[in-house]
Amino acid sequence: MKFCSECGGPVIHRIPEGDNLPRHICEACDLIHYQNPKIVTGCLPVWNKQVLLCKRAIEPCYGLWTLPAGFMENQESLEEAAIRESREEANANLKLESLYSVISLPHINQVYVMYRATLLDLDFYAGPESLDVRLFNEEDIPWELLAFKTIEKTLRRYFEDRKKGKFNVYNSVISKRNRLGEKEDIIR
Ligand SMILES: [Zn+2]
Image (cartoon, rainbow, N blue to C red; front, side):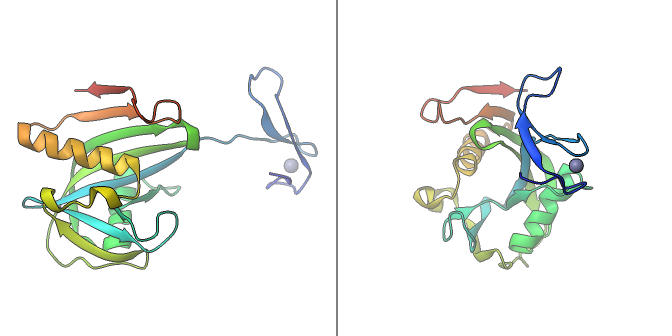
């Protein structure tokens, strides 16, 4: 950030008085421009035993498969954002069931919030951000062609939980430091 979005004045990067992290501060109007993590939300839509995946038509990860998800907008709830993303990417009509996974990604300043959902019909089709939208049985999931680690974790847990007949809510962290052996907490 070089210029203030309020007054157009020059912005410097320093620790404000009484704070402990450097911030972007406007030299003209003194406004502090705080930057905070972004929320990515979406869902895991299910039809009978099958899960809906979207093949990405945009970067990053063009051509790889993902669950419908995207950045939450201002003025909307998490649930509204998860449903909107599913409509935009897959034109999917669905009902959210329950919060399912919350995954912090501190190294890229994002938090993923994923819901379990039930598809209401089979009228889905690829939106402009998807090359293809399909239902997959567990044995056909393209594990090697999934776009994001958060999506892989959410899907793997889903199939494990389904076998056990019980769905927990998961809270975990994927960071650069522990990408291979990430710490994981289960919240009931
Ligand atoms: Zn300013």
